[in-house]
Image 1 (cartoon, rainbow, N blue to C red):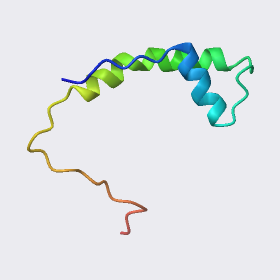
Image 2 (image 1 turned 60 degrees about the horizontal axis):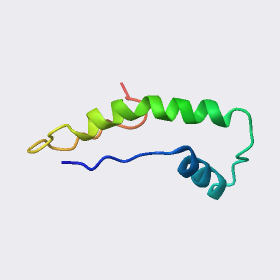
Image 3 (image 1 turned 45 degrees about the horizontal axis):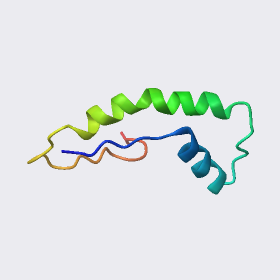
Image 4 (image 1 turned 90 degrees about the horizontal axis):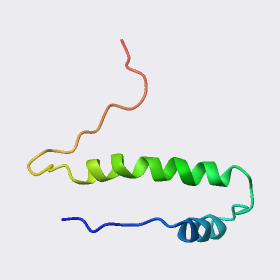
Length: 65
């Protein structure tokens, strides 16, 4: 079972700052809210049992024909 991972505002700000992002930029609060909204979807994906499935690699580039 996957452990619960929390993304506090302080941790988010620290990561943003480490990446060179201005932590006082007005859009940063919107980005944090967006990431918080993604968490349930990411948890669902993480809980999928993919045992026995082969990796799928879609073809790259244009199909000739």
